[in-house]
Image 1 (spheres, rainbow, N blue to C red):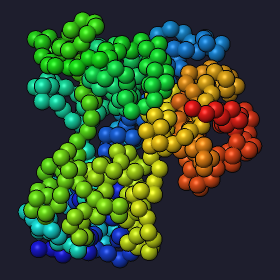
Image 2: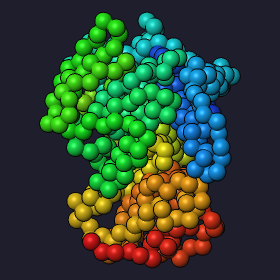
Image 3: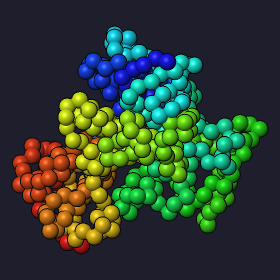
Image 4: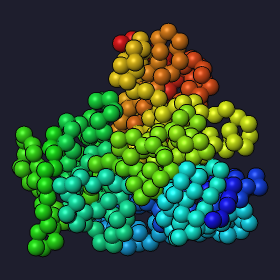
Length: 456
């Protein structure tokens, strides 16, 4: 038995900074990682996919120069090997930086292997028993694969990043974040793309207007959609292609493509941890149950990041780290419920979201005011030649506080932070309305938009 002050299972965006923070405070840390340092964000998520988004945007720019008076000769093509090589270099730089930092930290011992609980405060890895008064689980999540598709030679958000040859026809099962982002980038790379979604609209939790606008501009780029279509089964063909059969009211009942990407959801990586031995409770989907301070039902055991079901983003995982570090090491009282829901969809143009949308606000009983503006009314968007999308803000008519906002359009992923800052400051919307923002920017139209508030 090896004794430590802290055991951290998983090196994602909560586990890694927590390991260094605990070590800096003089605690002996056992740091366990079974696959690759850096977790999803560095290896399979934000870093590689946004690198691909950037390459896809360059390809799009090269094909649309004439719209801005720039004549670019025909013949633009994408070398997926070079796109992948650039991505691999970015990933390696981040992962190598983490490894070097761990190797140079005397208070961190790295164990590379799979962790399994053997008791409430004990874990085994590579046949070595470890114990600590505090254990932090940061094991992330992976693609959910429906039983009826498991026999196919399918791609996930991980394996699609390892392709070196462009798919001729990529079938995407799932019309939410992962499916839409990969669908658009591979269409821009040069693949034919069909996205299958069982619901009547894409990204179903968004307001209809936002969903429809995103659907429209993706269709304009040539992506084919099959909505209201459930994938009942699939089969591999002799030539290596894949055919999926659809339960649908309209359109052909099957589609054949060269590749299939499954993007119907995520499941937590908790099934190999032997949580039962530690007495740690999960919900029916496998997410570890925690309180507002991220502690499980077992004292001293905490769950951070995607595996606790309280956020599925890098920024929420990092905030989990901040909650633990602030409370444990700085005497603060930070809680999960302090944070405002925020996220981005990295299509082009992107969607930045903060707080509640209109539908959610109404369901909670708020009497709301709403301000809206289409991007084609924004001068800077017109000057950039990027007028797709719209901005909207939802406000509580009684308190005059912002309940939520969506910025779908050029710069939306960055602009949304300005709205978030006001929401965290708990300030009335008039602070933004009466502010003076530099011209010409997209952000400058937010005060103008707020002048046109309307009731529901």
